Length: 420
Image 1: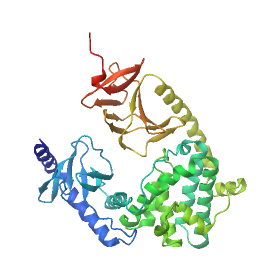
Image 2: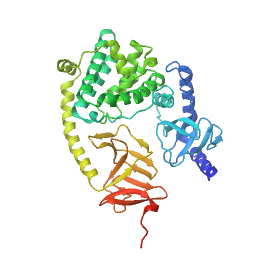
Image 3: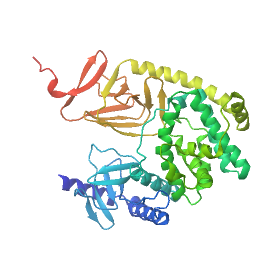
Image 4: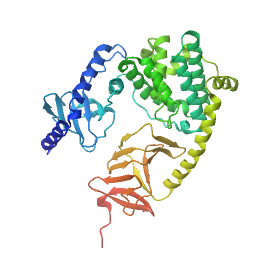
């Protein structure tokens, strides 16, 4: 059966002429990036085996053989099939005896975007070796009116800093860190939550831009400008702020990557540039410089619409629902479509979630609790297996039962009562 699956996977890749060279091209680009860097940026080579997965078929192309014999050699690379229980995402993956740089097809057509993605995910593969293991942070404050306003102002100040030189750059960077400190002072968990994303996706994004983009400054500025109208900062803002702070540190503190220890990049920059304390007067001054009144008006309107939407979500998840216990979950989600819901968790608009009970796929949202121990899907149908925009596929040996009227949960099938 395993050999049959590998043959099918090989056929799937060979049968797609438009993507025939996708894997070898990406592997060659990754090699170019690694050779140009020569382990200078982080003191560790970013090179590693590359795995490209087709989400529709689970067919894979690999740049190197695995240690478990799951892949079959081809003319250019190796091919196989990713088992059903393994998540697919742009990330790192421990599978078949290797730690892979995993990318989901299709890869970006634009060469710069593709190279930035390759370097970004290559950093994730080595981050544990650097002592920078990933941590989770909810960042619920970034769905609030005040939190979003201060984040947008910070990103605008960072863009001004990158467009400036000398004292102008210094003052704009100081303003960015002042606005960041104001946000942390306004929301109790903000510093710890943002710290987690800054050191995970922020550093990966910086690495991707620094090593993958031919003109890192211009790429970082385009990203900052695009994020000014971003709808969901909670899991995504560091894709914009990470490269900006990293490039500023490259100018002001070149050895900062060797001095990370327990700090976030913005903290290292603040130690050099020493921004003002976030007094009301200082915040008002900075806000006026970066379009604060206009942002505040836009965010008031957005907050009103969000309150209506979140109230509807709260009602939906309090009603008939599917409740899933998470013990060893695997996630695939779009970080640009995550909505924190205070005291409940976060709504993931696009989500694939796997655990011992099977797989949940949602394209219109599902909720994961703050403690990451429970997931909810709203308004199940009569059998509990599907609802608006979601479907549950149970693993063998599992069945659904109603824990309470209208509340479905998977349970091991042997515990079900036998019919009389």
